[in-house]
Image (tube, rainbow, N blue to C red; front, side, top):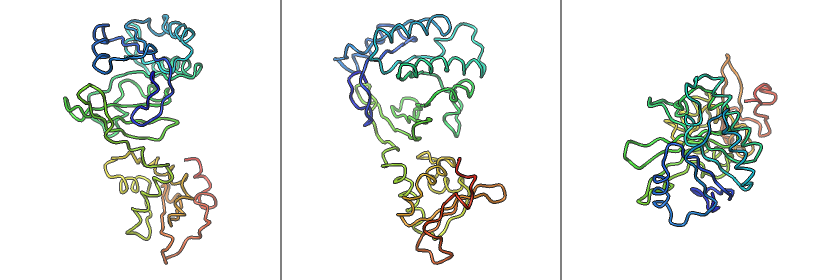
Length: 292
């Protein structure tokens, strides 16, 4: 970001970056930096020590940002290192600490990337492995998890979710210079409307109609959750993409039946009970479904 170069094909805002590498020594940081580049810009700044939250860290960050108003990113490695001794791991404390950092980020229009650990246990939802209470995910705008394929493989999956971003997964591989290179990016499918339209067009190719729950549909179009099409996401994408689906020859209705949310998809060329082309998918059929 300090150079303004795209990261894995995603544009960045160029500016000063601060890395609080609180688990490392200056020698280790220097060695790692030389492995990555021989020409680090002067706007990349490192610090191996800081105060903790509630005991001076906030003031340190404010002073740094006042001195470097072009700052775009602050990395704190790790969360545990900026908490005081004898920290009580409760929901209220987690939410309070992250809210303090988020307030600073919002006030200055920067990103604060907070490094934290995952639990060792495996889980279907990788974000449930984030150590601590659910307040950690709830208090931040976005969460990212980095999970290695297996120890020493040099291959990882970066899963990304947030309030203002679409869920995506990036497959990365470490090259000989210790730089993570992009292998694949699930977000590179065009717009969300084009993506779900193409996905459901292929799904409906051999069907005239589908009626089922969001869970059933997501499992059919994304077996094993390979590209992150969750039940909630498939519902949201369909509601956002009614026009695109109509152009692809697919009509859709989202309704409730016996307390369950159902998605009904039908090919427009189906001769069985054709659905009017201008049908509101959630207006008169299920007026309470707009807020999904």
